[in-house]
Amino acid sequence: MAFWNRQNGPSSDNLRAAARAKKLAEQKLDEVAPRRSFLKGLVGGGAAVAATTTALASRDDSGKEASGFWDEFFQKHYKEMSPEEKQRVFERIAAQANERFGVQVQVHDPEPIPGVSFAFALDLNKCNGNRMCVTACMRENNQSQDPPIQYIKVLELDRGTFKLEEGNMYYEGEEVPRKDKVYLPVQCNQCDNPPCVKACPVEATWKEKDGIVVIDYDWCIGCRYCMAACPYEARHFNFTKPKLEGRDLNPQQGYLSNRVRPSGVVEKCHFCLHRTRRGHYPACLEACPTGARKFGDLNDPDSEISAVLRDKRVFVLKEELNTVPRFFYYFG
Image (cartoon, rainbow, N blue to C red; front, side, top):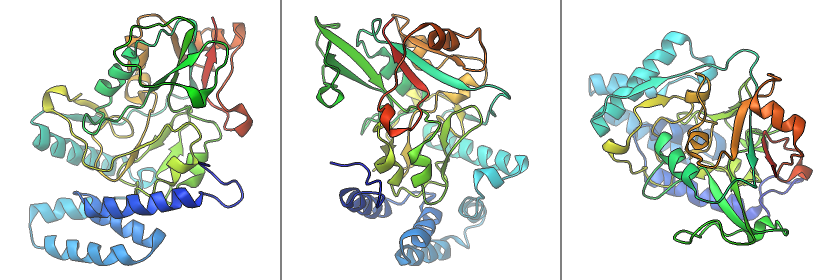
């Protein structure tokens, strides 16, 4: 199936899939759905406006709840909010998470570090397919347990052939590494020329100054055009309300990263920006027992990532598409 028709935009198959997803998401409206439905109506037709009007009428006399609802419904785009407006949004999100999970949650918004440009590299000779990176990523980033969402997929490939379409990502329970096999983790490539950003009709996703492509989950309308545009299958859609247990919740959350997502929105890897912008490594790197992952600042000549790009023969996936990834592979 073609993910993207370069002349005509999303393929007909993906447009139909997006329409089905839109219908399902509207059937499973959550707290922020009225505003999202309204935006969907502006983008794809007026059918959702009636649902929005009904929702507004049902809440306009509910006191404190109405006040919070109106703040949420008329929330500005992330880039247009003042620091004070952002803080009120973060406090509201934390309060909602506290009520839902019974856990004291803190929502932060670390900004890009001036002059820093993040990138990842992975040594395929060291990766043994243990998938500890997948588990660590799920725990760190509050990913849904049912249905499961995983930002990282690890492909098992035949050594010497390297055909991604033949990669096996369902090798659980088998001893790794297996003879004559290599393992290739795939996640968001944080492209310098991201097709997903260009495909979003409401600018809910964009590239930050440090190279990280982010998503504002409060602004996403769930059309899934970004998923159709991504050649790495790195974006994931929440068809239902993500299932998480309070005991498994990471309470240190970033607004543009690992805060709990609602249903009907897209999510993906964000280089653990709530960690990396504070001087820590991504969770997947810290969990890797073989040292296969390298991360750092491309603008720092002494960083690990700069050393890899300087001293190793690196490659990127689907280079011919000119997405200019920031996720590099090499054989150390």
